[in-house]
Length: 185
Image 1 (spheres, rainbow, N blue to C red):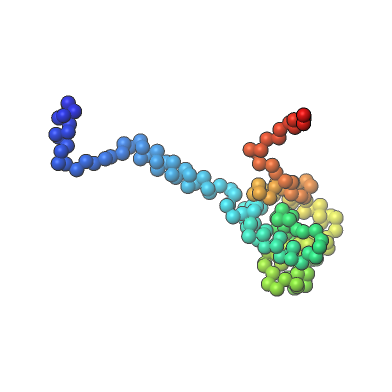
Image 2: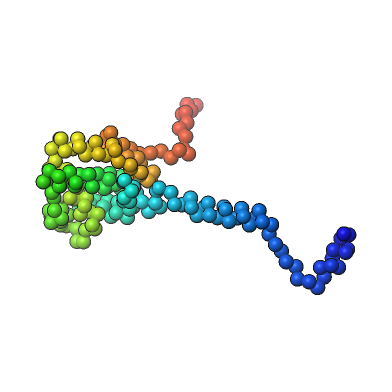
């Protein structure tokens, strides 16, 4: 068909644009892939996930800020250290219960009594700190063994959990490369 015939044929008729099937299919596929990619093992508001249980960033931040409000010129509690305590808490509190050295909420409230309305996370932090002091070395060894079996995923913002050292190790983003220093001339 000649171009002039094509124009005459479509004059007066509304033009319909139809996307070819592959374009529509690829658009839907890409959209669903992007939507599902956010549903990985690390939730966006999680500081860590320990054996499927999420520790929220909000809890970590509230512990850090509330405990630091009690510190008087001393060392401040970093968010990474607050997260470490929250990772340890279920294991320490379970072991304390097992050996009949349970710390109650009332004891935890005494420790943080200067905080007007402590969060539940801060009370759990205080319970864990008191409980770990009451445990003997055998109990602590059992906790370490349990931690080595646990599946712990930490948000890289807080570092990485080292179960052998029971510590948080700072993590450097993989996009930062160490470079050799150049001598000053």
